[in-house]
Structures are given as structure tokens and as C-alpha cells.
Image (cartoon, rainbow, N blue to C red; front, side, top):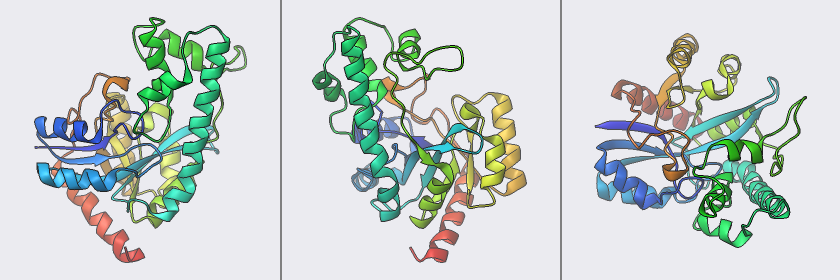
Length: 289
């Protein structure tokens, strides 16, 4: 059996519904699956129930879209075993969910003004059943119109490029202020969860992981589709040095994924899951959840 501790659903930016995700997990012999949608716990309770019916242990989670202001880079913080709907998570994340959807609306307006034949209504249709529109939904509309043949590619880079000292931002770029990573770590702990630094190799968060271990970070994602062998080795070394739980998962996004992975394609060993469960019990006893 496989243990996948990082997976999304249509609630955020996966093309698969919760039911689709869990049926695929069953097919792929996944025994434990953490559902970690971006900035929301919506749908977790129904996922747990359906998981029980299918013989899959669903670990309630979240992936908070955060920012490391000290090192001036993005950072994603996973929260595993959080309490769905906890006030600490809702207060922190709901404003970001709303800001992201509004930013997406402004992006679509910019693209329409630039001559792209898409509509906000059509883009929204791809996000139906979720918390709002993501860039992937905008790209889906552009793909359907024949402007590109993939979600991630040159057009994605051209439209959403953030800009730098030598180049202007892309025509569809709209900035979003993300959550402070330290606030994300603390909120996850208050909600009874295990804060885990997701894919540190993607945003080069290795130095920050060492610092955050002292303020409440409990784990680091070692195995991830975007991690090189060097990234994995560095993450494992930090975990061993700073007593962080090692995790890993497919980061499955369905059609909207930027890597050719499926649920269970990245699996953790049972020994690490046992350590994670023990850490969860310690936190729950500490805060009374």
C-alpha cells in the first residue's frame, strides 16, 4: 500500500473532484491520503467519510500559500491533521481566497483587453465547485480557444510573468499579497495540525526551514515530484538535524498539474507516518484538541 501526503482536489486547483481523487487513490492502492487544498479546509469532512467507505484513511490537511519576507521568496506550508473549519485557519486564509479570485478576475479583464477571446463566465465554469478561479482555470479557457496546447508552457510564462529589473510583468500579471509563512505555521498549530514545509526545493526554502524549526515547524517535505536528488538529500539532512518529520507526496493536480504524476506515484514509508502520528498526538494533548 502507498502513503501520499500531498494531494489536491477541485476545491482548489485540481481538475478532479474529491470523489474522483479518492476513486483514483483506491485504484492506485493508496492506503493513506492527505488532502491539502490551497488555503481552505472545505470538503475535508466529506472526503474523510468517503475515504472510510473506500478503505482509505484521509488525513485532513491544507496547503497555505505563504511568503518568506525575510528571504523574499514564496513558501508553501502544509498543515496535516488540522481540524476542518478551525477559526484560526479561516481567519487567516479566507481573505487570501477572496483576493485570489478577485485577482483572477482582473487577469481575465487584462487578457480580454489585450485581444484574447475568452470570457469570465467561461473561466468560472472550469472552477465550478471550488473556492474560486486560479491561473490554471484561465489557461484552460485559453487552451480551449486554441491559444496554447498545454496549461504550463510559454504562454503561461508570457502572461503571468512577475517581471524583474530588466523585463516588464506579463500582460496578465496581477500581484497577490500572500500570508506570512510564520503566521501560517502558528495558525496550523493552533488548529491542531502539523506544520510541514512543502517542496522546499521549488522556492529554495532550505535556510528558512532551519529558522522555522525553532518557532514551530514540525516537518519538511523530502519526497516531491519537483525535487532533484540534491533537493531530497538536503531536505532529509535538515529533517535529521532539526528533528523534523519527513513527508512526501505526489502533489497531484490532475489535468492542471505541472508534472506527470498521479496519486501514489510519490509514497512515504510507514515509519515516517508513525512518527507523524505520534507528533500529532503530542500537539493535540498540548492544545487540548
